[in-house]
Length: 230
Ligand SMILES: Cc1cc2nc3c(=O)[nH]c(=O)nc-3n(C[C@H](O)[C@H](O)[C@H](O)COP(=O)(O)O)c2cc1C
Image (cartoon, rainbow, N blue to C red; front, side):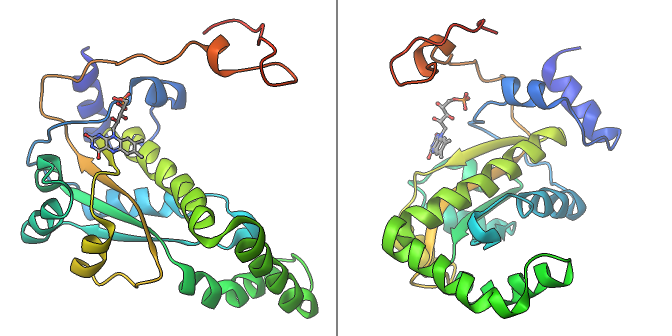
């Protein structure tokens, strides 16, 4: 069966677990989408698994704005370099790294961990202070928010593909305008957009990747990786 037909079959059967290596190898950044809608239950599933991503201190700085209404997708397209896929896809998720919200929810997150048998409540304040000092002092909020939000983003993209949908990751947008249009807090980072839907044929071609021996090293940088190419 052709790849696209296989993916459609996956959705129809309600299966969610295409093989992970197949999902990663066959995922393509989709250029055009059909107007088929994604059920809300599938969007919830995609976002739930995005939220299961790991983060430093488990601070979970990501927030997701799901844009589904046609008029709102058009507004988003206008601030996303006019990329047509934004208004074509059934849903576009704005991935945000939220600074103030991360600080505000830290205590609650640590208390939840305490209830699950992790750490001691009396240490929470000190650990949270250490975390905030590390982020603002050693890393910087902007890279820290981006780093973590992209993990949740990748989880969402792979989950959507695993459910049989097609996706398009996007960095082509005006962050200030996206914030303004979608009421995103000023101190947040708009990290990336993820369009999710069903690709319009023809299937996009694999653009290729660097060989493993060009990107992987053994023990020290520059020392050739000698493992097999896949
Ligand atoms: C974070 C990120 C941002 C991207 N932004 C855009 C974008 O704004 N517009 C676009 O057409 N493609 C965008 N792409 C898609 C890439 O061009 C594409 O992933 C790359 O060429 C490899 O192709 P493939 O994903 O089909 O293997 C983006 C990809 C990533 C990962």
